[in-house]
Length: 233
Image 1 (cartoon, rainbow, N blue to C red):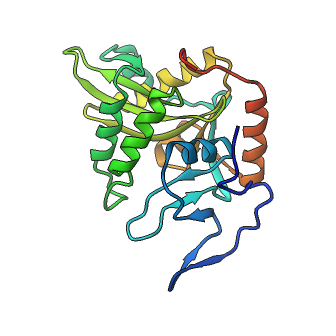
Image 2 (image 1 turned 45 degrees about the horizontal axis):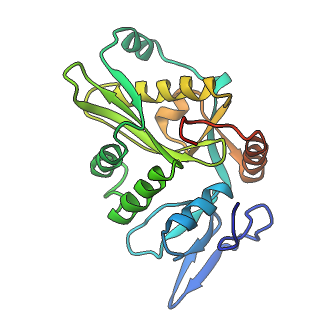
């Protein structure tokens, strides 16, 4: 169960700005700045619909955005090119086979819209421990030579998968890993996943933005279903 490090976003009065020391920070989407990144804090945060996102030079922000991107599986759209790539069977997929390599690869991935990675060594350490405790999970894509060439990882927030990051070394590897994850989650009774923030790829697949309160209601309803999304839950 969540403890009381973070406020409940459903009742929290989000200020426009907060002052920390000599500086002011925008705070419409942030419930807290500077709370340490620990296993217990991350666990509580996700169960409340909050996630940490490191930004250089700013005390660690813990986000619950006013507009949240989700993908409802009934709305999934698979482009023809991706469906064709899936039929070619160039990759084998696993779940939780090599979490640490996946998160390390995500941390090293170059992203044109980001000057650096937000996946710091502390993130790798804490999320790897959460994986050991069956809360963080990964999907791996392997090529025909047995090399890890793509994947993704995220958090099980009590029956809802919250996607964190993806990487690829071969075309379509991470996209197909996501489709493999959706098939797996569907087989466990899940009907949607949390994308956190909208990206062009997720929008192409049918993701949409909903307001914070609607997201938190979705999360609460899903948690009440008490789904077991992964084998070791």
